[in-house]
Length: 128
Image 1 (cartoon, rainbow, N blue to C red):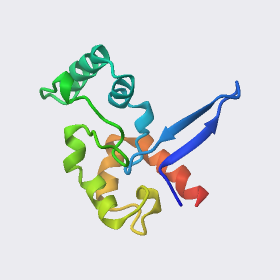
Image 2 (image 1 turned 135 degrees about the vertical axis):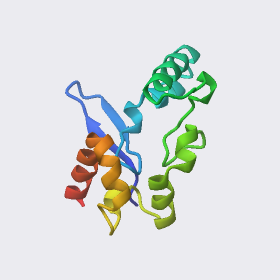
Image 3 (image 1 turned 180 degrees about the vertical axis):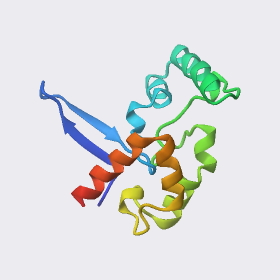
Image 4 (image 1 turned 180 degrees about the horizontal axis):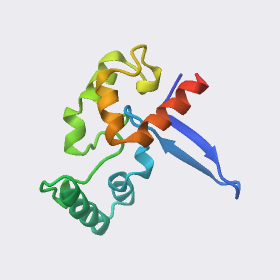
């Protein structure tokens, strides 16, 4: 069974699990995900302030709760309406790297904003 989790060995022999979103973002490196997993209201506040400035909108600290868009019961509000996420769920793919229509128009637009997401998905595709 394919999952959206990849285990990486670190030099000190510890392992770290990366959670990859449908779109290629590494959820486990996202400050909103990290604040949620730490259950830190202080970090949620910092993330809300940062994102409010970045996206020119008001994001409240209590809205910063996310377990990752592929597995999460708790999601950042945008993820509930994300066209890439909704498409991937509809198609039943682990993430967009597994889609027969890769790279679609939705992803092309997204990669202009998030080029690292493309690198992540390309790496996954090479391993398929």
